[in-house]
Amino acid sequence: MFHRLTNLTLNIVATMAMLSGFLPMRSWERLEGVPVPNHFDIHGVVDGVGDRGILLTLALIGLGIYIIMILAQCFPKVVNLPVPARKAEAARAAKTDLAAQMNLLLCLLLSFGANSTLSVAAGKTQTLNMWFVWGIVALALVCIGIAIFRTYRR
Image (tube, rainbow, N blue to C red; front, side, top):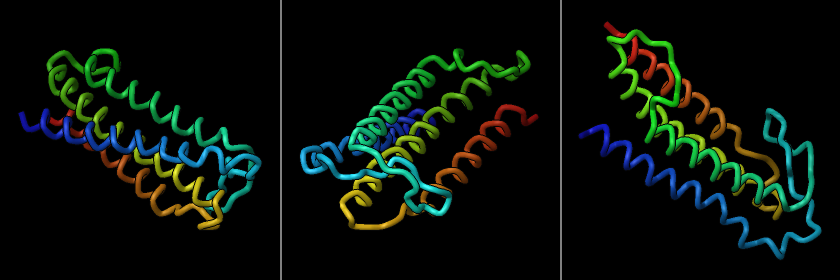
């Protein structure tokens, strides 16, 4: 019961994050002809620009990942992990929880990317905040480690 409630909460927040990735579309008309960053280096500095289509691309990628992660939660057997038969139930629970956690983290990351790209294009900031990106990567690694531990503990 606790895992279901936790996963539901994570999915609700992920839904809001995924939808917020579409917020830059409100500025669509004002971005006509404006160079929009389409690539950042490891320090968050813009090293490539393109047209406003990158904002739609980021939002649609976020929607696609959201759908895939929801399906992975509904059908955890699709996520194939080699586990012994006696660990099958633990693996199913770990995969479901991991899909909910990764759903949230990836939706947050893509929403952050879309909204930060808009901020840079609008001239409100010059760089991407890489601390947020590295924080998401660190949290993803922790979630994966916990899922592996939960699956293979004795």
